[in-house]
Length: 353
Image (cartoon, one colour):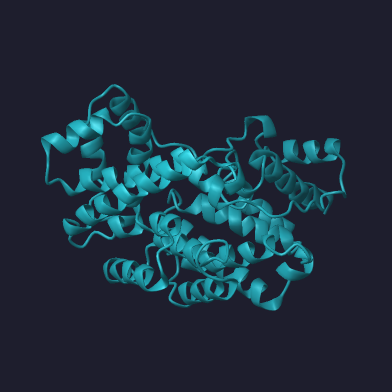
């Protein structure tokens, strides 16, 4: 959910090298390419919501659970879609869990309800903690945060016990591992359960990467090694080659003395960008409506922009335009404004020829 994203994505610096064009020129370039005006860009979502999701949200907000149960069941064995749908339902349960309680009461052994319940407790814990830095968080918030995370750990145990070959209860436990500070050995056990069920689960890899980042429970070296390993086992269209881009991005934003232009044009990062570009193209060819594509395009576009590959970057942005609620933009105080600046700068460069 947005609160967790904001907390995980705190940015250490705000470089701005977009001084070659004035606002009028940027606006003209955006208009020339039919780009969404900045005031209309959604900073909370990475892509347009699907109609089925909106229908389910309306149903649970009305207090009924049956449509939510069907919605999650309809994902079948598409584990990545099941992960997305269970996350959406968990977010709704944080707002009002009456429908979820009714579902769990009616179907006490339902693994779907167990998954949503466990996941919702993690989201609730982060809601209690708030989005402030540690020094701005009260003792009561910290106490509530850890109390609910403890409940979540127990709930995940129950969900995993009935999961069968579903990796989602293990994927969803990863933010809990960050919050409670699981030692590496404990986290690696979770990861082993995911890998044996779905070794190419993209959301799982992105969640695990965050655990291995220096800002959480690992180091820059461990995060990059994890990202490179994901890229090494990537097959065309699974988008695993994009995971290492996030690792490189995390390194850049945490180093105040780094020159982003020089950094992103390093040969190993250019090679990783090229691999991700091919991966995104393959995923698009398989399914242009793949909901994993917009976040991948946004991060890839940032790398292409940072390498002065403006036409290629603009192509990615045009595919995913109108939404900025995803990294790298969600690391900024105003995601829509930052995204539009970068996008329009690329458009202006392309228009200039």
